[in-house]
Image 1 (cartoon, rainbow, N blue to C red):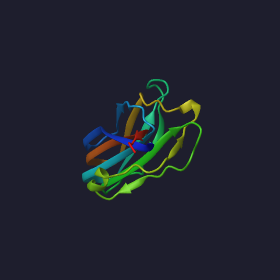
Image 2: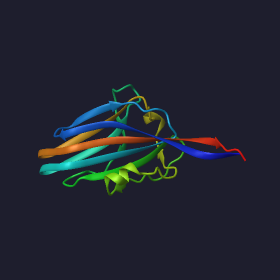
Image 3: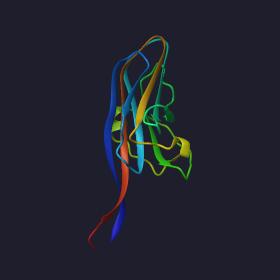
Image 4: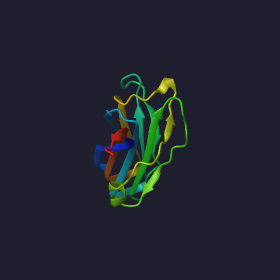
Length: 163
C-alpha cells in the first residue's frame, strides 16, 4: 500500500549584511513540485523614509530580460519575517498568499501549505536555472542589518508501507 508524502528540502539562497544599496543575487533551483520563499529581515533598520523591496525573478533568455514572479510586501522600519508559497504551472491559477511569520522559531518550523498555483504565461515561463533575488533599497541613508532569503523545495512522492 502506498501513501502520498512530501519531502521538503531547505536552502539558504542569499545573506546580505548591512544592505544599503540596490543589488541582485543570481541562483538556480533544483526542480521541485512547489517552492516556498522565505525572507527574514532582522537587526537594526535605519535611515529616513527607508524602504526595501524584494522580488524573486526569472529569465527565459539566460539573464538578458528579467520577469518578477514574486514581489514581497515592502519592508520599511520594522524587522519582518515573511513566507510566500508558489507552485509553477502554466495551466492553473489561484491566489498566492504572502504570510507574515512572527519569529525565528516560526521560520524554522514553517510548514509548506497545500497547493498554491502561480500562473506563468508561455512568454515568461519559469526557468528555475536562471533566477535572481532583486533587492531595491530607497530612502535617505537606508540600512538593513541582516536580510536572508531561504527556499523550501517540496516534492511529492508515494511512500510504500508494509501492511
